Length: 405
Ligand code: PMT
Image (cartoon, rainbow, N blue to C red; front, top):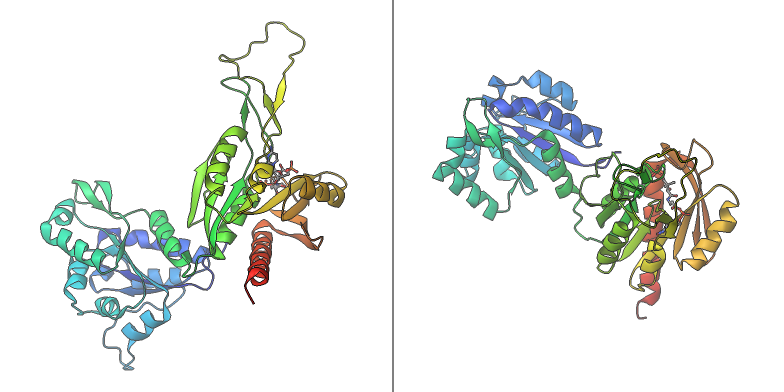
């Protein structure tokens, strides 16, 4: 999903062996839809070629402080960017930043930057632990520079300790977090996603086919459209979207506890999880044996209805999903009313093309006032953006209506 579409990154690369890792960082940023422009120090060119970085970023690399055309690249490139990432950030460049030295194109950009700066230090552990470096990092933090890492471990010089540049994925997550942190946060949205797993014995569970994809897409879209997102997820194999707080759970009871705790502090609750309606009345302590029996009888007891409980909090806007195999609109309207929801998103789960586990979905949104919006088949990521936009519009309308005249 293109979480960072429209965002522009200026990536400063300095002279350290970790420079090779910025290739993967550029790939992650571009895959997320961000535009990347690279500026290199002369020392960085000893480790990685401008051609490699130009090819990966799809743009000419900035390297010359005195270009023949007389352009002022250090001013225009930082003016056009939303974030400056310094990766790797060597001890030397951090020292220059702290001292306000601008002796190459990248250090000029850093001095001219009025945008957030994220630095990923990378250096030998003795250099990192040197009081001069520690003082420089402290100074830069005080001035508002953001840091990610460094990690601790074996280093290219053969020593072990702190100073390894963070993994590209970690730098990407921090960058996305800074870029998606909106100036004006709408509030907190709690989203449930994925299946629940109800244990029968230590090795068996009752569960369902939810992949979590719809709920995770909602979480990504909500973060992008101005929400602080708490994602309560059953067991799935997906990575959480950037800038989303993940709360992993397994059973419906665990999901209920987390939902109650989080929803009390939230403004909106979206129940996209496929919660087991029933669970075994007890989980056997040891693996259930066959023992020659022809059949095995299970006694199931009801799980709490999470969204119905949360909808009772009149401080949150409650949005549910309805997974139906027949009479889609009729059953969904019934759930909207009995669970006391503000909005229900009804999806037909009888097809393999949409609903559980698929890349696409198709749905009917039904609002408390009876208004209906049909969402034709589309990718779950696109549907998530439509649903969150509708939620934002609904809240905007409600706050206009309740504003004093
Ligand atoms: O995860 P994917 O593979 O992407 O699939 C997405 C999905 C099909 C699971 C999703 O779009 C969806 O429909 N989620 C709701 C599944 C469901 O449990 O529907 P339901 O009709 O049984 O429940 C209605 C509502 O009550 C849902 O908001 C559900 O989260 C909630 N519920 C249900 C039971 C329960 N004990 N507590 C609940 O809160």
